[in-house]
Image (cartoon, rainbow, N blue to C red; front, side, top):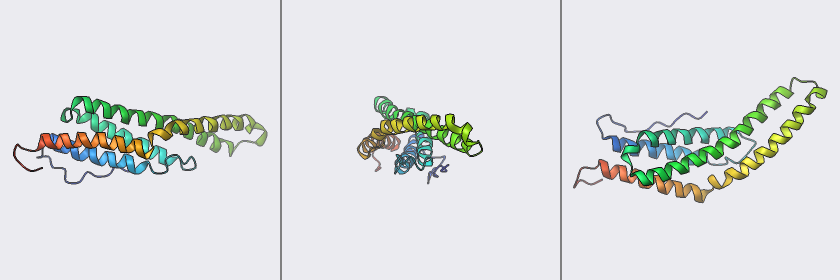
Length: 167
C-alpha cells in the first residue's frame, strides 16, 4: 500500500485553518495521483491505493470541517464519499477474484470447475463495477472535485490570514 505523503511545513504554532489547508491539499493530490490507470483490472493495487487515498482525504476533511464553509464542505465531502464508494465496489470484486485464483492453484482441476464459474461471474461484476467507477475517475470529474476542494483550501487560508496581511 502506498504510504501517506508527508505534509511539509506543518507547525504546531500555526492556525488550525492553515494546517487544514495544507493537509487537505496534500491528501487531494494523492487521490488525483492514484487515479492514473485505476481502471486497469490487471493491476488491482491501483484501486486499493486510490481508495486508501480517498479515505485519508475524507478523514482530513471531516477532522478539519470547522475550517471550511459548511455548505461547500458538505458538497465536496459527498463527492469524495461517492468516489470512495465506487472504488469500494470495484475493490470488493478484485479481492474476491484474487483470493479465488490463489485457491484454485492448489485444487484439483475437477474440483475447480465451480470455483472457475464463480470467478467468471465475479469478473463480469468487476467489469460492471469498473464501468460504474469510470465516471468518478474521469479527468473532468476529478477536475471538478479539485476545484471544489481548492475553494475550501482557499477559504481556510483566508480564515487563517490575519486581517490586512498578504496570504
